[in-house]
Length: 322
Ligand SMILES: [Fe+2]
Image (tube, rainbow, N blue to C red; front, side, top):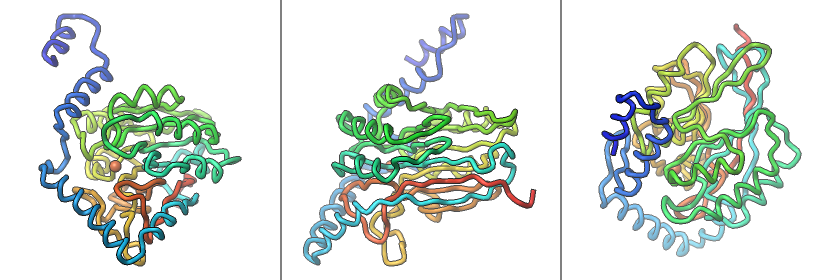
C-alpha cells in the first residue's frame, strides 16, 4: 500500500497528502494492534495485569468502604488558574489565555460535560486546547463522547478557536467527528497565530504513548524557525525530543495526575514509559516549560483520591527579565 502511494509521487503526480499517509498508517496500527510505544511495547500480559489490577482495586475499595467516596471525588472537578512565566514570549501575546482540557473520558462519567459546562459558562479565553482521550475505551463507538464534547464546546468562548490532538484512547476515525465540532485538529500539523505582526505557533502531534511514529519528530523539526511554539501532545513522553528541538511550552495530559494518589497527591501508577517526574503540574526540562493536566474525567474505575480532576486556565506571561 505504502509503496504504491509513494511511487505515485515519484512518478510526478500530485503529492499524497500527509494526512492520508498518517491515517493509513494509524489505521493499520489500530487494526493490527501494532501500537508503537516510544520506549518499547507491552505484551498481552501487561493488559491482563492491568485488568486484574482494576478488579482488585475495586474489591479493596468496596471492602474498606472507600469506593463511593472515590466516585464522589471524581465528580469534584475544578477550574484551576496558572500563570506561566515564559522566556521569548512575543510581547503581543503577554497575557494570552489558554483553556486546557484533557482526558475527559466523557462516557465514563455521565453528566460530566454538563457539570464542566456550568463551571466554564461566561469565561472568555483566547484559545482552547484539547489534549486527547475523549472517550472511555480505546475501541468501539465514540458517538456519546462526541455529543458530550459538543455540549461542553457550546459553553466555551475562544477567540482564536479550539485546537486538538488525539489521545491513546482515540482512533483515527474520530478526527472527522472532532473537526465537525469546529475543532482544528493538529495531527503532526501546526497553526500559526499573529498579533501586531508577532507570531506564536501551536504544534500538534499524534499520540506518542501508543502510536509514536517519526512524523511526530518531523513536525517538530519542520516548524523550528524561531517562532514561539506551544506543543500539544497527549502524554509527556516526547519531552526529550521537544526540548532538543526548541519547543517553548509543552501541554499534555494522559496521566490523570495518578488519579489514585497517596495523601499529598503522590501518584502510584502514571501509565508513563518515561518521564514519571512529569506526571502532573508545571515542570521544566532544559529551556522548555511543561504542563501536565490532571485530566477532567477518569478511566478504569471512575474514582479519584487525593487528585481532583480539573480544567486549566493558563495565562502566558512574558519573563520580566527580558
Ligand atoms: Fe491516555
